[in-house]
Length: 517
Image (cartoon, rainbow, N blue to C red):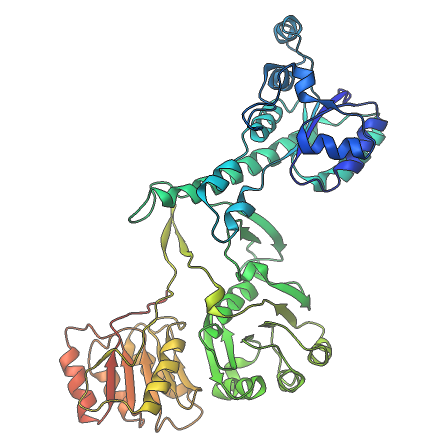
């Protein structure tokens, strides 16, 4: 374990750097630095040698060229056990640099700003930082490379215990971490720039960069290992930003269901509640307030709701919290919880309470939907499609009434979030029966009828895709429905339209399908 005698420090995020710099100085480490980092260290009383003084070359090109120099990169790449390297280093007046402390220009934060210009983004692409990091990581047997301020405390402890040295095991771990970070950095740059030259379709190469949020107890089943990762370019309002304020550790299945609940409840502007099981909404309702919405959502399927996940689009008040507390649920996600409501729910020590604000769909940027298949990924635009149902085609003899239009809009928004084949019966802003995931549409109709706890008379029906035959519509009509919303597009649309007319139903075609697999 060679002793750390010389270090170079150049950091954008200066968290903890003064304390670390003071420690290195106390260990008699010579510190090289540049620009703002050198200024901060000097002002704190840390002795610093400017890189320009060390190399004999000034910073040029508006600071674009600071650390790329044979005396820097040579001091990092030279293998200490290689006589030829040592001879060449001596001949070129290159001295070993034993530690690199660098974090990079904040490119991702820059491009996340609204209205950022390309020129600003380009200026925040770090060149010298990644060069030093990669050089040091490549030569990790001889050089300690530090790219994360969270590593400062453990390095201080190790150097204290080992008279200023760092073990080869630590160096290797830090080097791997650096290559992960530089890969993530390049991925962010690529993903920002690629759309500017890709006018149609998807790019030839798509980079995904993920950072671990937490390990999970297990996956969908106890025998499966699992972890939760954050897309480093996740849009504002994503589930990964939700804060857990109470309850047990989240599970893999909790996170899947929370995402489903969040996506569905964001569809509504009125106070709304969505209760989800296995990523399917089993009860959805709107109301004059959140408490009424919850009671009506639970009423839709009180058996399936037990142990479910609740999504709400308003801050939870005590009345809503009290109603929820009477039944067992795994999780609740909402924009917030009033203190009195929080006190009620915290009495249930295991329920997971999640806060994510704002919840409205208008805050979510369009993102890609990614699904894995053997050896690859399927990419598609996220299904953010919507229609103004008052402008779509009325295909029946009878036009929907204003009340039916409102109800069809509600039912259509719910059906979009139900696994295909999806059938949803609703009335007065409340789901009455949900038929999900059946292999035939008529089976989904029959399942939704069976699940209904109330009479379906006067309700409306939404179908995520067309009816291939009239049998599904005939079965629904027997329950007393009054209106239907579906995409249309079947070769037997005329037979289905004829069935609607025979039963006196109003039916509209949206021209937009919402398959969900």
